[in-house]
Length: 476
Ligand code: XMP
View 1: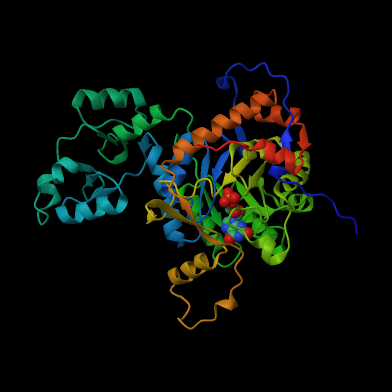
View 2: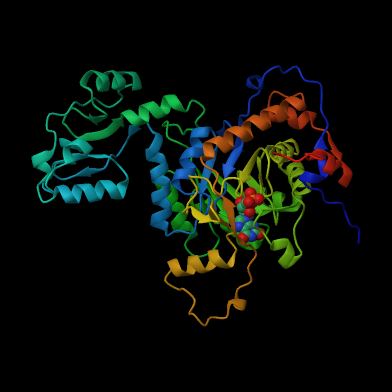
């Protein structure tokens, strides 16, 4: 049996090339996530329950990337997370939340809190706009009183198709923050909020769908409800689905990909995880629009320890990229990225984007609470195949293991960890993107595809690796 070499990021460096770039701003990080989805930066937040729910996905889309909502939620919860992302950034909210005028103020407050909004439109039984209630109207109102008694009745409205500029002018003229859209008969057709207009200006690189809403993806599995889940997620507006299991080069995965593509032919579909060209070929033949590469590379993975299986990430990306290139299918490098240098190497090796778990776990936007230990702040970041994640999932499904359950029945392929609390994900993505822009420049490239053409890797020895780190100094 022939044994090949397998390399990963720390085994290689990119050889510097002549560059005509004098400023990072001359580089363009635009890329393809999948056959039909473009991103402005090549970063994707991982579909893990300690990484991506709506608030991470919103931040990723604002930065120009995308977040994939994890699947360890009920179908309604996961679709709800997708909806929250979609509503967060559109200039016109198409179906604003409404409340009838005969509801109590307390009921309105509870409904607004549940939906995470600061105001509600009041709709009569015929669906026409009857008024609006905002924080100001509710502030000192009697909770037992009726919405009809506190709402603002004389509402400034605009007609469908109003431009952002015109909406802005109306809001300024009338000193209002919410502008309902109604048709000629008074039926509610949408809502523009000042926050959404400001967001549109504040995030010029945001990745958006055809309606100007943030891009968002969502993960599905291969068992049970995946078709029902896919339908709900697509219905909520998910731009892309990700069939995500640990061993993606499997009949289970291929069958799932075929079923989803058959049921929803227009669905943009990513599948993984794989680590070989044969895996990429099979997924592409089954109809995927991008493949996700990485087996055992993740920071919380113990797949390689437990099963002895996997491919070092750089070799996995290079092997799969060769197959993907022939079919024009983008590749996502997933797992093992710890620095902007790693991301640059993955992209230079043929990935179109990079999925990040550990780098984004522990941020303000990742799910979970901040814990304090020895005066330092942490958040939990855990593998989706860890014992803790599995028990958490079962508890959610109402099937928590009994106290005397034999935990040896479950073979974990991931660990639960604590990562330092890192502040906002926006700052981390800025650092990553800045490092990547410099990386492009060292490769003499203005764009990611150019870097892939120019890239020349050189293997390094342990001494070379040691030399690449800060050395012989005491780092402050
Ligand atoms: P990083 O290195 O960015 O990796 O933290 C994130 C990726 O790791 C994968 N993942 C797992 N792999 N056992 C595994 O073998 C697990 O429990 C596990 N949980 C996540 C996943 O591909 C993720 O995007």
